[in-house]
Image 1 (cartoon, protein in one colour):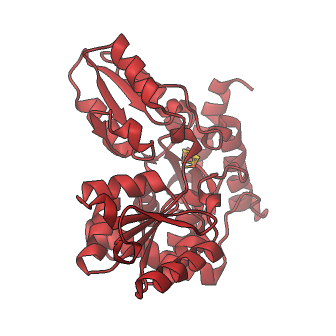
Image 2 (cartoon, rainbow, N blue to C red):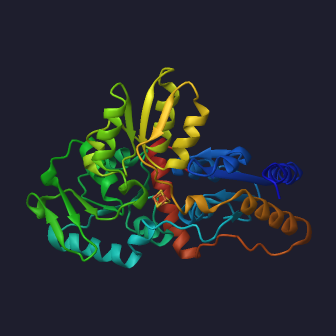
Image 3 (tube, rainbow, N blue to C red):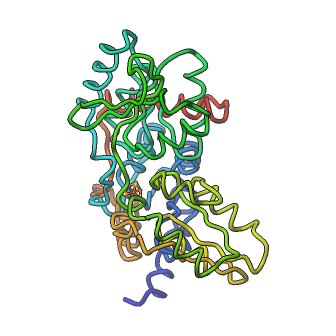
Length: 354
Ligand code: SF4
């Protein structure tokens, strides 16, 4: 089936179902999917938008942890579907709830006080649930500084997981001395430049393989080719790369910075390359290039054909009660804790109570 035929059918089913269906797409999705979506955003924007949606069916074009968060925040009776159930996230799999609980205990044994878990959105529902049960919060790359600052001001120490680079960048943005942070490895060993008993922020050593690909040499080579350029990178990139950039920001932040850059700007971007190529096609008056090709395999799994099949499935369920195969479910107990952690994030970020 041709792309144009699939797009026509997607639009026809979408129009037929009207407000009963919402198609949400993460910025890293393929442009064909973005073109069919009702909501496009980063993980924070999508969590907030889908939580306020009253559609009976939310089709989430992204990866598992995002669809699970939408499920956790959904109202009773709403169905959340993921067109590719095998679209996961290697970083989310780097730490289990059990491992996170063991690290929290380890930190408490060392410092004598229970730390607050601050878990990156890119994590399992079980990990989020642990954070919610222990009075912690979820954060995203757009609000990590706000969330962490909230707890530091309460005088609490923090276990930040799983992304070490975002954690390190957040600590830097909060002007924390390097001696105030400690690294916890997956084998539970601890490294701290100062006295670990006095550390305020403990970072887990997880990383995103897509952003870990960017190297200082990529920035240097880009600057040699384009001396008058701007370099923007995502905070999941390594510190050595971030230090060479003109701007470090979340996906949404990068999108806004690119939009407001003057015509003729030359911009090198260190983040997922499907997104960077879309920015380039949307801004033909600027030269926008990825610092290196680094697509997210999991984000790229969802095709137009998967979206169309999901919509057909929704139609069959709506008209004939045929069971949904791509529905995302989260255990009730896990969902309660994860919801608490997600709600805390939204409250800290926007002052909004769901
Ligand atoms: S870009 Fe990185 S963090 Fe995001 S889904 Fe892909 S692997 Fe996970």
